[in-house]
Length: 247
Image (cartoon, rainbow, N blue to C red; front, side, top):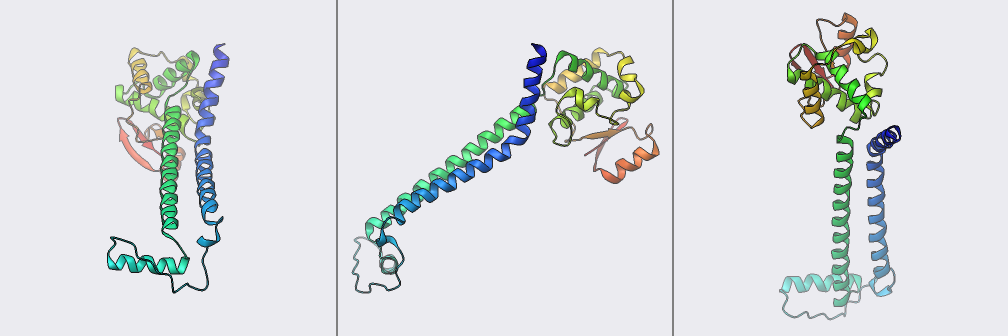
């Protein structure tokens, strides 16, 4: 049962990373169709609202209570478009409906964006993955203070949320050639301390100092080849304690 729930949780994260933009496009499309349908039904269904080549210059319009310049502009518009006062009212109704549809679309997109963000922000994990998480944080930053350990957990979470990396704790940690404790076996040998557990729990609760970092390295302990790759291919963000963080 736990395995099936974990599968559903990972599937949710995978879907929410990619569905939002597609659904946003669909909503905008529906709005456009709705507006065109409303406008087409009013303007396309009556010849008196169509543009005419020849103006009816003898049309007499005397709106009450309007300034002289506004009367002149309305008269000219009615001559060119053969509009009656009721036509102008219909145009104003269409404008109001169109603006209302646009507002609804924007609100819907905002709600979907918030839902997608909330879904991808919450890290899904099993008891086994929690153990993997605490071990990788311990192995990578066991000599750091609490903030240094939180930062390592932050990078793991940033990768889970990123399209560039896998979607689960286990897949991220065990991705080939990413974390040296996996390669040298120290991940399974390390003893997780209470400080590391606290750091992981605080990171899971939302404590984040990473500035979106997806990579980190200890320059003194890294090979010159790896250091060169980091410097050439990534954007340097900041250094904390013994680790430098990149994006």
